[in-house]
Length: 168
Picture: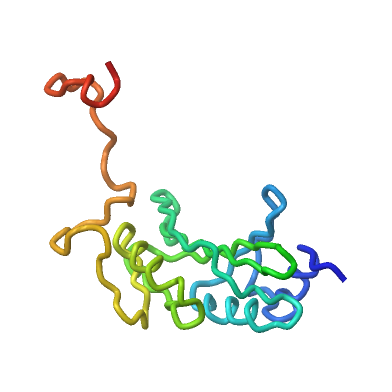
């Protein structure tokens, strides 16, 4: 029997009940949410279940939604079942004041650097991470550059040469 989005959703709902929800299928990829306290439980279930076998972490990233109070930061995990060649996207949300999410680096070795990069650019604190420090930016940086907290560039500025930026 082929693994389908319906089977995956059914197994998740049977295991976690109303703790998982907001199931969607953009471009055919099953996408769902769970509370941030359950990120490890859900990912471990997706990994261990003999029918599901999502054993490969394709991607882990954050998204900043500044207007969504209490859910400003989203952690997005994309996991892959290599045998059935199917992926699912799993999201957890956290508020920007306490961006603490359990690390998945013990489950997926590839998560180690991806979590460091996400910390570096978004400020997500991965609880239990073995070496959570900046990976690309300088240690002295006191902000997280990919958060949408800064105004866009003033287009009326005349103190720069647009030729240097490919706009002239």
